Every structure is written in structure tokens, then in C-alpha cells.
Length: 437
Image (tube, rainbow, N blue to C red; front, side):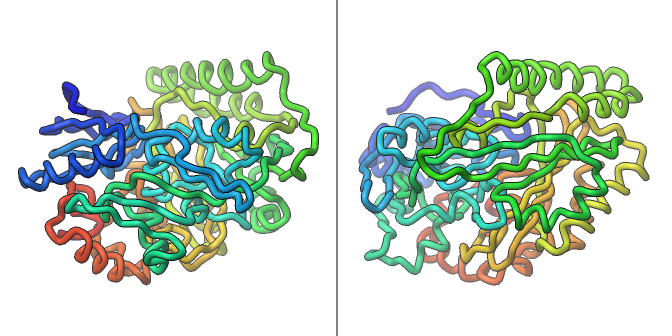
């Protein structure tokens, strides 16, 4: 299905392109036809989900394949807890799809607007030292290759490729369906509160080990950390959700409405940012409740922003964070968005930011109308000095030569790309930068 196309922009307004052709394939066969048609015309192809990557990962100068019509459940194996989903399914749709089967995803990030394929391809993750990113939940995958053929990867068909395709940047083929290993539906007990920043940083490793899912936000120009500690409840244990009015006030009025005003005011009167941040650190959070896991993991975000996130070895996250804090103080910047710190288990996925090492994540943000460049560039220098790996879906400036030294299987991935896409049918400027020509 081809529909009129104009200029495509990502959510953060950091990337835009006017594709030569836009297609909305509603079936697997339609994806295969689109690939063969593009190949016959010599056009590059990029599959696009929700456009929530801050990087240029989804930019499609040639043919843009929008997978919005390729959604829902393909099949369910309740006994094994495995669910096969179409690749265009949005993460926020999955809990309702799994609910009739009393299943849930093991872990999620704090934003659920992404498509399943997009989240996997860019290495989206949540927090929790015993849990990996979303891609570690993948047990099988079907791709349409550059010549329009099907490539099935599961326990019986080329299983050795699963660690490569689980986080693939869209460089190996168009993902059309994914099989996830799910778990019995469970609740989370959430405790969110402001705490002294020095104490939180000093105790970060202990908190991360003791708590199922721990993270904190630091509002620059303050000495306060907003901590979030989520504890997994046994399946079937009753929960005590927030009252709807309280949740609406916290997440919609304060979390989005008030924050939008804060960001707008900060642009007009930059000296007011430290005062506003100190107020924000007091009014955000400070609540305890329990609810279905997906309702605790994720938060609605309507304030548009730009983000850069780096993964550093777990033992270096505290020192890297301290340098970011010193950087902000030394430069006199007025940073209106908090810095986020999370953790993850090591995994064996070739291009996962947690590949081969327990990981701490440090994410910096700026309001989309603010100038992020000097701040992000300086933070990036710090992260690179700590063996940092950039999140594939967020802003960074690294190249293939830089990244090769950080990923032991980088050249293996490039070799697989040479095998599956020798003509670079899935190329775009971002892939040319981070993977090479």
C-alpha cells in the first residue's frame, strides 16, 4: 500500500527527510514485494516504527517502509510463555495483548511509544541489575532480506545469529515478526522519593544489587536525587494502585504540564532554572504504590526533548556521574532537564551496549527548543573517557572507527552485514557513519 508522503520527522525533531517513496505494508508478503520493487529500482530501504529514536537510525532517503499496519499477536505458546508479535506493534499495545494470557514482558523502559522492532534494533532498555535490555527477551525473529527472501532465526534455524540480529540497527533486514520470552503477569511495588544526592551516588551499587529495579534522576543545580525503587511482587499478589486523580495530577499535571511551563520559562529567563529545579526536585515523586508492571515501568512523556545516553562499565558509573555534575557547575549552564542513571545486567548480544559487562547508564537531556550542542559534546567526552558506548537510538557523534574498539564482535557484525546486505540496500547516512560503508 503506497500513500502520499511528505517530509518525515522524528519525535524529537532532530532528524527529517523527504523519502522518494513511502509504503505501508499490511502483511509479510507486502514487505517482500516492497523489497523486491526497491531492489529493481536500486533504492535503499529503511523500515520505520514510531520515529522515537533521537539519532538518524530511521532516516529513509529512499523507500520508507512504515510498519504501523503490521501489528498484533501472530501466535501464543502459553505453556512456554512465548509470544510471537508483528514487528510494528507498539510497546504500549503489548500489555493489553498479553493480558488475556496472564503474561507480561520481563522488563521495560520508561517510555513505551516505540515500535517493538525499533526498540529492539536500537537497544532500548530499562533498569535492573539482574535484567537485560528488551532485546534479551527475544527468542526468535523473522526478517525480510535485501533480496526479498525470508530469514527465520530461532532455536532450529541459524540460532547462532540471534545475538547479532536482536540488536541490529536495521542493517541486516526488515524485521517482520519477533518472538518474546514472557513471564507470568506480575505487579511492582514502587517507592519514589527525593534523597540526598551524595548518599544516593555513594550507595548506588548497593541499591542496584538490593533492589529489583533502581534508578535515580538528578536535577542539575540541586543536591537532590529523585529515586525510584521498584520491587517485583509474586504473580497474583494484590496491588494498591494510585487513585486515578492522584495519578493524573502526578503524571499529567506535574510530570508534563508543569514541566512544560518550567522548560518554557527556563528559555525565557535562564537564571531562574536553578530555582525552578530545586522546586521540581521537591514536588516530583515522593509516593508509594503498587500496580501492574507495565503501569509502573512506563511513564507518559509529552514534553518534547533531546537526549544522549551512554553505557559505561558499572564500576565507573559513579565517577562518570560525578564528572558530569562538576562539568555543569564549572560551565555555569542552566540545564532544565534531569540527568537519569540506570543499570543493567551483562548480555551476549553483539551490539548491545551491555555486551559482555554489567552496565550503568547515564542519560542527559535538554528541552527540544534549547541548544544542546555544547552540553552534549562535553558530556560525550567524559563518557568516552570511561569506555562509554552510546545508545544507538540517541544522539552521539561516534563513528565506526571509534565504536570498533568498544565492541568485541563489531567486525563479526560487519561481516554478517556484508553477507546479508552486500549491496547496502538498508543503508542510510547514520549506518554509514556508525558501521562504515
